[in-house]
Length: 375
Image (cartoon, rainbow, N blue to C red):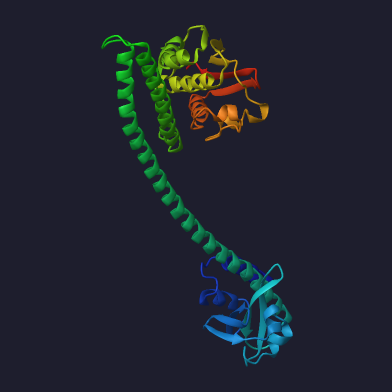
């Protein structure tokens, strides 16, 4: 007669095999309870499919297809003509199969052991099935991720190439317009000056949109690296203002500067892009004035761009930093934009371990503040 100790020693070994329903597994069970043969059947809607040791199906009644009743199974002569004991493969009282142990009469203790072993096998079989499904899904997901990465790379390369091809002629247009505006090729009449200003303004706007699309594609591809260098904060502000000077003149916007100059170690181009985007936005939505302030806060540079324009409602102040977001307001929508400028600026600030915040009230203007560590 098997002992409880023998049974307890067997239990861990039942989990060693990858293929649970195998000859090895049933040989282990035989070391505890003697039987001649074991047959495993899985339940399907209209049959019991024998999956171990041989594959064949047995038609069963509709009643039996809904629940495996012990009395019906034991009366089924098709299962086995030899003396046998049936145990149930089930999880949470849901039966999905049976194990039929053929042999001489089993004692109550042996039956209890076979039931306990079958319970263990029930969960292990389902665990293996789920594991296989999981592996299959992971494989499918991995393939989808790789395909997505490939598509993203193609998209990024395409955008980079197109942006480059568009920027080259635009820079040429701006260069020639600058020569004409500065009267390097002779005097211009009033109408010609007006046309040159329009060319510069439109070209700058288009160049800004192209740069934004290129920048967001690089951010999404994690292909941007900071190149930090020391520079005076006034230098980068003046360069941005010189670029945007035609827009200030065209819109007759008053500029006030309250600049405390200091040195900062940051990525010059990214800092320039942040300020360019914020001042460009202020130019779009201000009434007639923009103020630029700089301050130091412990080890941080503080740069504020303040306008007296249409302002932003409190509920929209977080939304405006989201990609492709434009507030559903006619006075805002009439200004063409990619909806990427603030997203890019915030991302560039975060790369410096900084941030951009906004304080605003409708019809009272906005204050966008950039905070970047000095080093």
